[in-house]
Length: 296
Image 1 (cartoon, rainbow, N blue to C red):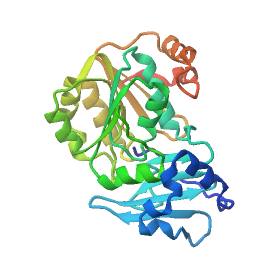
Image 2 (cartoon, rainbow, N blue to C red):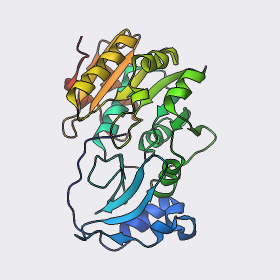
Image 3 (cartoon, rainbow, N blue to C red):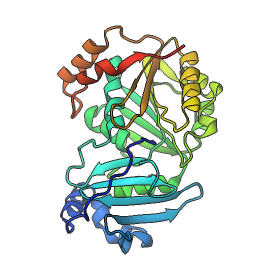
Image 4 (cartoon, one colour):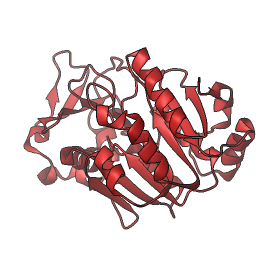
C-alpha cells in the first residue's frame, strides 16, 4: 500500500470536529485509554500545518499517523514519503485514495466475489471497502507487522469480524504454506523502500497463481519509484498468468495490474455492469479508457 499520492500542505485541522465525527464511526479513536502513550499528547509539526497523532518505531518501520485538514494518513519511515493509507475524518465511508478506487474497479472483471486475500494491511482501507461493498465476502489479510494491525484498528476504523481475519505473517511464507484458494487476491504490501524483495519474485507470483480459485483474479499495486523495477514486476506477473491488463491512475500515477486465466474482453461493459450493481460508493465506468494490455 504505497501509493504515490504525495502529501500537500493544508491548514491546521479546525478544532476537533472532524476527529470526533470519525471517533463515532471508530470508537477506539475516542477512547484515550486504549491509545499508545505517544498518541495521547497530540503533537503539532513545526509548521503547524498538520497534527502527528501517532509516531512509533516497530521492528520493521517507523510508523506515523498524521492528520491534515479532514483527512488522516499513514506513513512508513517519515512523513515526507509516500502515503500508505488515507481516510476521511468527516466521512469514514469515503474512499479518498485514487488507487484504492481503481483497485476496487478491477472487481468488475470477475463475477466471483465470495472470498478475498489481501497481502499488506496498511490502514485497512481496501479490506474495509470490500467488507462494506460485499458483506457476504470472507476476507483474509496477511500483514507482517502487528503494530500496523493495531494502528489500522485504533486510528483508521479497521474492524476484524467473523468473516475478516488478519494473519500476522510474512506474505511470501504465507503463500508458500497455505493450500487455500481465493476468488480475489490483492497484492499491496509495501515498506518504506518499496515492494519487499520476497514479494517481487517470479516464484512468488507463480505461488499466487496456484492460490487463485478458478475464474478469480489477482489485483496488484506495483507502483515503484524505479521504472525498471516496475517493468520487471509487471513482466513477472504477466508470466504467471494467461491474461493481464493494467491501468495507470491519472493523478497518483499508480500502476494497477489485473491478471487471471480468463479476463473479459469487454472492459467498458464489465465496468458499467459493476456500476449498475451499485456495490461500490464511486463510479468505475470512467476508468475504462485507462486500461491496456500488459506489455510483452
